[in-house]
Length: 483
Image (cartoon, rainbow, N blue to C red; front, side):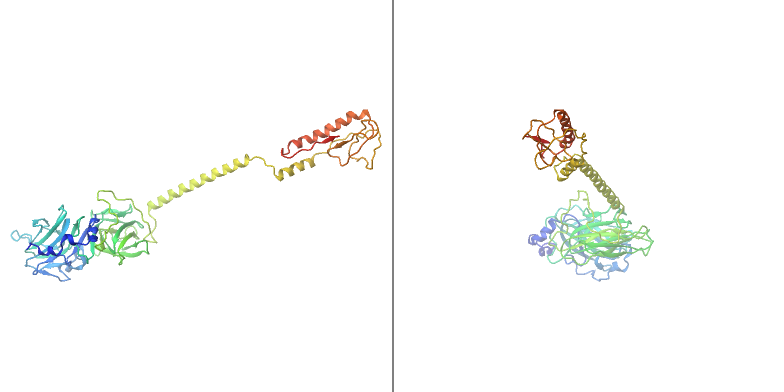
């Protein structure tokens, strides 16, 4: 029989492929194993399962035990426990008060694969919970067994175990149990608005109203654990969180009842969610001087068949740039950086629009100034009006000679007479451009030839400027024709 027969209950090659996929994709966060987990095997004698264990009698500055339970060793009794896992680190947390006796020693010992590991020998506040009893890092990525032996102690309680899971297999995860992951405040998957600052080297905090933090995870529930720092005695404040851009939920941030910093307070726990990928956004709604919003770590509850992180970044890569895709607090004002960004963006857009309007106006002005003339009806109407507005030419007084017209129509009074140019009889006749009738004459007086030519030239000179301005596409009739 092997030394640890319970390992036969969990043969590594028989786990469901989805469980293996879960741990192959788990590159960040550590698995939390509560003291009541069935994977921890306690010895039959020496352990007390009182739900109000020794750690609950005086929570102290580190708060109550995880899930409110712990396994305590009866004083002056010997006890041990075994836990198998596949991973690269492991730690045990709880409460212990060692004997100050060189003979009795510390009272407990931790071993991994039979090799002793680092054990905490003294505590600043030995009655507090969440104390690291023993821990080790840098283990080979293959199956291991943790053994804790309690030989003599005035006080020893196990609260929970914390181990870094293997990226290859899930040897100690039963198919019917949920996985609880602890994600520290400095995990690269958590995005902080720039106003967040470090707090005592173990957390982050903000006092700027409207500042936010976001976190994407895969699971079905999340718990936010913060810190209540001393020095903020001006009153409580509040915050709000939103899941998947839904309606925000508000939570209260209380002040200290005592003057000492309080660790591990649960600020809020989300409602039960469908198993899958979710986005969390948290916002601070308080003011300067009030209780700040803090973060120590997160608990992510997820089924063992999926990875809790959709695309976990390598631990060596820098934190990706992030911004809130939704507002967790409808009443939170914009941060200083957000206001500055909005002003700059608005100025750039407004300036670009103003320049475009100026360019468009110049283009239209030039296009109108250089547009070619077209033979439109308005242009033709203008030409018609030009002819109408021309003044009538001056006429010399009618000559003293007389002539006798032939035909039924008399000579119009406003048309200068055409003097005879040939002998009497049916001679040639002239048709004036603006005459309303035609006439013939017999003979002519040679003394009036030059006067008639001068009058014709005068009339032609008055009409030519207007004709030059006419559209070339319009055919111009001669002023007169001869036959």
